[in-house]
Structures are given as C-alpha cells and as structure tokens.
Image 1: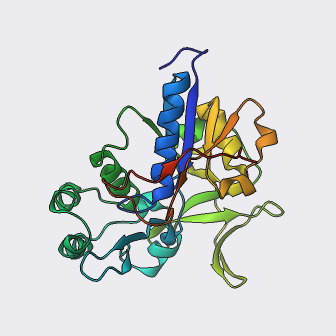
Image 2: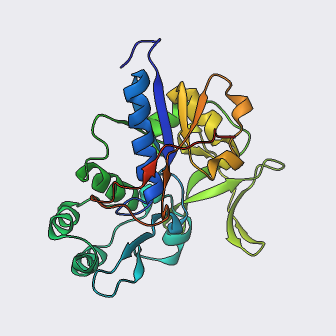
Length: 273
C-alpha cells in the first residue's frame, strides 16, 4: 500500500463484457498514463453489484461477414437475469460451450483458449477473470462494490439498493427513502414490492447518484478517471479532495476491446465536468 502522501488513481466500471468495451480499456490506458506522470497506485472500482444484464453485452465484429454482432450471458431464469446482482448471475455451462464454438468467428485462437480457461461461476467473476487473462489488471488493485467487507466500511448514503432473497434468488431491490419499502422496478412504471425485512450494511450498494461518495469513503482516491457519461451525474462537489481526469478518447467506444486494438487511444483535451 502507498503511504498517505502517494496518489491513488481510481476509475470505476460495471462488468462490461467478456472482452471489455473499448471505453473501459481507455480508462485503463488513462490511469496508467497518469501513474507514469505522478506515481502512486491504481484502483479499479469494480461495480459488480449492478444488476442490469445489458451491461455485459459484448459487441464484436464477425471476421467472416464483417458485421458487428452482440454476445451476452444466458441465465437460468428471468428473475435472475433481470434483478440479481452481476456477482449472483450464474454462468450456465451450456452457455460457455456455445460461446466457445462461436468465438473463432470473432477473435484469434489464443483468445478463444483464454476464454475456455475461464471457469468462473458468475458473470462478474467471469468478466474479471477474462480481464486478468488479457493482462489488463497487472499491478492494479480491484475494489468490488459487492464485497461485504468493503460495504461494511463504506459510509451510509440516502439512496441505495439492497441485496435480499426473493423466490429462490438473490435480487437487488431499490430502497424507497420516503417509506423504507423495497421494490423491483420492471420498467414502464411497473414495480413489485417485496416483503419488509431487516438488512445491514453488508447488503447495501449505492444508487448512481450516491456511488461516488460511497466509493470514496473506502477507496480514498486522489484522482478519478471519469468516463464521458459519468460527467453528467458525478457529484464532484461532494468530493473536493478528488482531481477528476477525463478518460482518453477512443474510437468506437462501445465496441468490445481485444488485444491488438490498442490504436486510436488519444489523450482527452477537455476536463471532466
């Protein structure tokens, strides 16, 4: 661990595909560039308690057709797919085999082999293990929002989700601040209220607008690499001790990154809002 005067460079992201999206790769590049300039350590705040299955979509270009195609995890049931945190969305063995048969259309054999070697049992662990096999995590500390020990150390926030059991699955329910009730939001204004139950800090993860302050209470970073979308909701005034650095520009940012795609990462020219 660095001493108290050393910089702590942080960036955050949900699990975002078996090959990470290019905007996440650009955050790695930005953080490493900053580390070369000022020293210190890098912390990847891995928001694995998010539950949105769209986050893990992997967009790759089919080498035979030239068309972009999207791959994603498959889950045991609809409830787990829609509402379980990503660390509790179980990877089906048949999905792993199906994707392994498809991947040669998209990536070289050595990357297919790295996929086959990955045996993690949930979506968050699977993505993280793949990022490790791709060399992205070398020398980087990972802090996970789903880690009960981290949650116990984090500050209390006024807007949050709670991991609770429901119908045989672990689900991420929204806590409603005006009455303390728990809900699963199904979209279109529809929601399901869950039975009242006790919960503690180890079950709590922050909502979007409280995530920065919650994370900072544990990570205590000096610099934060902010993505293009984050600048619209980050409450920078709540953490004046942080220097916000815009992530470097990368073309086709929502497409998946694979080794060999290192080009087109350029230093950003505007400061994060």
